[in-house]
Each structure stands twice: as C-alpha cells, then as structure tokens.
Length: 634
Image 1 (cartoon, one colour):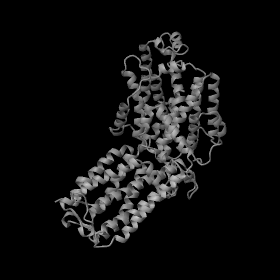
Image 2 (cartoon, rainbow, N blue to C red):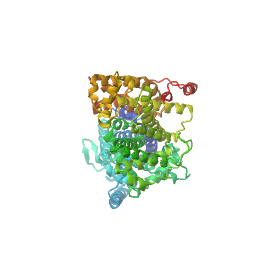
Image 3 (cartoon, rainbow, N blue to C red):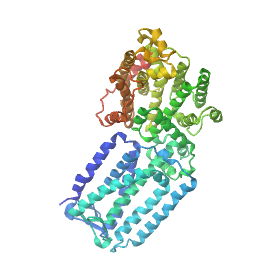
Image 4 (tube, rainbow, N blue to C red):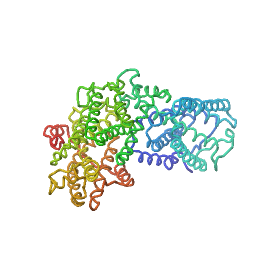
C-alpha cells in the first residue's frame, strides 16, 4: 500500500528539493514573488474546486492512505496544490532564464500582434462554455467539464496579456509544460496502480491515454501546467516592460520615480497588473532594437563577459550588456579612427555626450535621491545621428535610458583613459599601470556594482555610506585586477594593431630598444617570447596581490548576485591561468567555452569561500588610512 504522504515523500518532494538546489544560484526576488503569488492563488482557487468534484465523486481516495481530511479532500491534496506549483514554476525558471524577456517584446506587425492576442481567446472561451454546460454530476463529462471551466477562463486571460510573448518563446515554453506534465502523469499512474486514489468511471469518459491514466487526469496535469507556465510568462513579460519602460512605474499611484525592483510588494503587484494589460504593439520598439544591438556588441567583443553575465538575473544582465556595449563602442571610437585628428574628434564627441548625459547631475558620486528616469537628459540626438554609425548610436541611446541611476564620475574616468591613449602617455612604472587601469577598468567595476545594487532593489545606491564606499572600492580594485589580466594577454595585440605598450618601462632590461619594438616598429616578437611572457607573469602577480582584497567585496553584494559576481570575475581571471600555463607567449590567449562554463559552474555550485565580515569601524578605519585602497595608486 502506498499512502498519499508517501507519494510526496518518494516522488514529489525530492524532485522539488533537487530543482531548488539546481536553481539556487539563479534565484531572485522575482522568483519569490512567483512562488508566493502563484501558490496562494492555486491554494485559494483549487481548494473549493477540488472539494466540489470530490463531493460529486469525480475521484476518491483510500481512507487508510491519508493523514486526515479537511472538508472532502485529504490534507495531502492541499499540499499537492502548492507542490505542483513550486515544481513547475522552478522548472520554468530553469528553462526560460537564459534569454532576456525584453528581446521577446518585439513585434513583426501590429496586425499580427492583434490577431495573436485575440483569436485564440475565442477557443479558450468556447472550451470554457462547453465545460460549464457539460459539467453535470453523475455524467461521463462531469470531470472533464469541471477541468475545462476551471482552467480555460484563466488561460484566456493570461493569453490576452502574454500571448505574443508566449508565441515568441514557444520552444522553452513548450518544454516547461511537457516535462512536468509527463513526470506528474507518471506519478499519477504509480498512485493509481497502488490504489492511493481512484478516478470514477461514471464521471469520466473511460478513455485512457496510457496504461491506467484517464484522459481527464492527463488533461488536468497538462492544463494546470499550462496555467502555471502562462502565468510565469505573463510575469516575465510584465517585469520586462516595467524595467525597460519605467514610465509604467512613474504613472502609477504615487507618481514617484522608483525602480520596480525596489517597490513594496503591493505597489509592485499594482504596477504588474498595469503592465500586464499593455500590448506589445503599443510599446516603442527603439529601446528593444537598441538592446538587441548592444547585446550583439557584447557577444562579438567578449566571449568571457558574455558567458559570465548569463548567470545574473535578466534585469541585471540586460543593463550590464548595455553598459558593456557603451564602453566597447566608445573604446573603438577612440582607438579605431584612421587619423590622430579623427580620434581626437571622436573623443570630443564622447565627452560632449557624457556632459549632456549628466547635465542635470550635481555630483560625480551616486545621487542620494532618485532621479526621474522618464525625463530624458538634454541630449542633441540629431547631432549624434549625423556623427555616429548605427551601432554606436544604438549603444549611446541605450545607455541614456539607464544612466539615471549611475554616477557620472566613472564615465569621466573612462574619458581620461581614452585621453591617455590619445596622448600616447608612457607607462613608466607600476603606479602608472594601476592609474591607467583605474581610468579604464575601476570605473567599469564601480558602474557594474551600481547596476547590481539598483536592479537588486537597493535603489540609487548611496556610495557616501562607509560600508557602501568600501564595497565600491573593492569593485574598483577588481576592475584593476581584470584590466591587468587583459593587458597581460594583449601585449602582442596592442603592439601590432595599435602601436601601444602598457608594460611598465621598469620591466624592460633595455627600455629604449624594446619599447620602440613594441610601439613605433610594432614588432613585438623581436623582443622575444620569453621576455613577453615574463612581462605578462609580472603583471599577473600584481593582479594576484590585488585580487584577495578585491574579492572581499563580493560578500557585501546582495545575495542574489554574489555567486554571479564571483563567476564573472573568475571566468575573466581564468584567462590569466591560460597565459601562465602556455609555454612562450600566445597571441591573445583565450579560454575554451568548456573552460569558461566549468569555472562558472564551480562558482555557482561549489562551496562558497567564507570571507571574514568586517565591522563598520574597521571599514571606516580602512577608508581613512587608505590601506588596501586603489586611491593610493591614482
């Protein structure tokens, strides 16, 4: 005899435990909202429905196989409502998280969008009506009719809000339904064979899908899983709208500039409903097109960053992609112009844009009050459209939509780094090397922390607080570490393509001759592979000295981004390991996709390093003395 609670102990709870264990590194506040909201709705709606059908003997249970009964239904059945919801919701998250929801807000034509949204609703409505009028107790259509009138109105409503999104994600959507349905049907067959429960032949069609599984049972699992996956898609779609088009938030009840991830639950739910009702054809497509372009820049320019960013939640990944694309296109503008004069002109364009972008900002530190994201900065877009190629213009537009929560200082540091290259400033010693790394990489590290904090619900993060300032400094150190890895890898590439050398002069045994080989002559191999490798190893040792302190800041990031931040840092530092273990000096060392994935996997699922948590007083002392601070190198 198999009791109902044993069905859960042996077949459902272990699967949930495994799914939660696998999904844990990717779990966010949005997942908490899905689980709590959908489980509550399932319990509230399914309880009276199930009591009704059990009262009319659509199915019954073995009295000796249950713990106790509430109403007409065993307690284990109430547990099942939540268990099924959690199982399908988590599995859907695992399947669908790998692509950004915003990318699926694009439409091909308004007519097609309208047809997709409304035509299937007629089918859902017809099935609901048929079910309602055929759910007659003591007839063979009773159980099936009850399933239809219970699920079809909900499916119709969810399709109205998310039909276009669902169609655009059909393959992962279908997998999210099919796999849990097959598994739960198998569990149902096991319980039916054991006599744990039984489906009444008098209130069902007598058609069996397989073995002892009635058509109605298969229909129940399939349609309820459809409801759950439809709901997950609807939440993802509305969340993408709220984060990409924040004017949805501004128009809500309180008219305050707020990040949606920082809203209280009830306000978030109200905004969610508002965004749910918006059809994709009414959304401006430029922000989506610019995001597509930005992500293309990311995927082409940095395989390591692209791999590492995949571990973050969609909203963080989206803004990190936009930030990286802007840094990449501006770097290319400053480097790739044909003449020195054109490079100077490109840098002037970048500086003018940043000036306009932060024309309303009064501080180079993160603002302590939220700025209004719906008020576009005073940017002369026709001017930039006449000066920039389409890819660069898209990156400029994309960054302007998220700059409202970013400090201006790091952008001006980036410009200082570009100016360093334009002026062909010589890196005389390690202090100069670290200063340059501060300009071009510490700045990016700080901006990445701002993205993680803001999109994790921390709002416009106030860097003036001692603990927050300490975390920002650790991020800036990590930026230096990754830049040193980058420079170590690219000695030959920087020399042959740009005529540049970031190796400190103090590293050279014959500085004048070797430096000229790397810069004016662009013949790096004439220096010798062993000496090039020696340069790289020394810079990697410098990176190692900074890495321990830099890594301490990860423990102070929001829990949902800690493992992702560690994976992102270690995937990129893995390039240094490739440089170290390669004999001679390999031109632009790369990690394989397998290698990047393995490092990310270990960071996500391996044991987390225990970092000693510093007290507020120790952090304040560190800031005052400058111990371990990047500021001493600037």
